[in-house]
Amino acid sequence: MKIDKIEGCAYMKKIKGCIFDLDGVIVDTAKYHYLAWKEIADELGFEFTKKDNEKLKGVSRMDSLDILLQIGNLNFDEKTKIDLAEKKNKIYVSYISKIDKSEILEGVEDFIKELKRNNIKIALGSVSKNAVPIIKNIGMLNYFDSVIDGNKITKAKPDPEVFLLGAKELNLKPENCVVFEDAVKGIQAAKNAGMYAVGVGDPLILKQADKVIPGFKGVNIDILNF
Image (cartoon, rainbow, N blue to C red):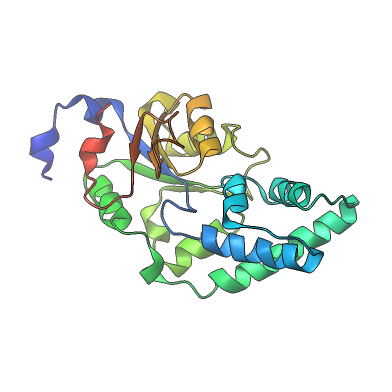
């Protein structure tokens, strides 16, 4: 889309930045989280299903472990929990170290390129502490003007910290930003930050979002028209 076709449109004045979650939005690393947590559950002797894994979307590592242990009806001291979380992360890192550009979800790279052509600032807003190596492995690091990950924040979604810090690093007001998220807690975090939210996935699950798309295939800058 040429710039002269969209100059003067409301969203070009209102929306100046886009903040993207990572897992399930740019690349499907959720499957690797699932496999890693499943290995931990198998070791502990209980079943962990893909349906159970939905509860972990957008949740920090330690909070995810707490949910996992609730499913298994288990309780451990803090040191054991830290050891389990670190073991899970080592398993997960072994998976993501092998990912490449082929795992970028369809349409998202083209959409981000269009945003760049139209001078929309772009940030990554993820609770993952492995976000940087992932976007390096898929060749997308240079697309982002700011990367906020689990190493920079202290509060997990639905707390808005990750997105507010993203807006701050982009030097933008929250109301001038749109968040793209695939998790309910991520949508809640975006709304708590005072930002627009576009859900990526099922509209019945992501009903709190301002808009919902099934994925980025065929999506263009018009999605920013609120």
